[in-house]
Image 1 (tube, rainbow, N blue to C red):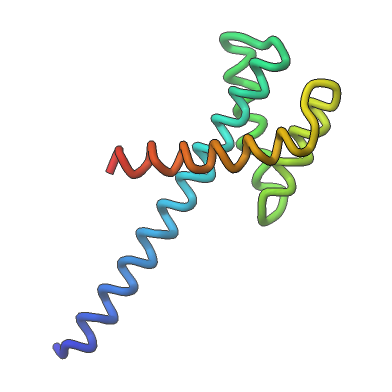
Image 2 (image 1 turned 30 degrees about the vertical axis):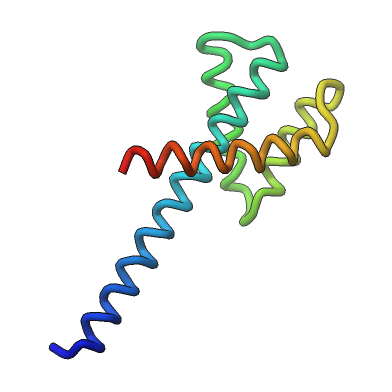
Length: 104
C-alpha cells in the first residue's frame, strides 16, 4: 500500500461522508420547513407532522430545491412571499446542518 493509495481512500471516505451529511441536512431542512409552513397554515399535532412529511417527499420530484419551493409557494400563497420562503430555506439549511453535525 502506498501513501497515494491511502490518500485516495481518505478523499473517497471524505467525499462519501460529505454526501451523506448533505443528504441528511437537506432532509432535515425540508422537515423543518414543513413544520414552519404547517405553523403558518395553523396545523398542529399529527396534521403538522403529516404536512411536514409532504414537504420532505416533495423534494424527490426533481433535483435541486425548486420542487420544495414550488410546493411551499403554492401552499403559502397568501401567507408568505417568495423572498420570505427562500430566506427561510437558507436559514433552515444552516440550522439543519448544525444539528446534523452536532449529532455526529
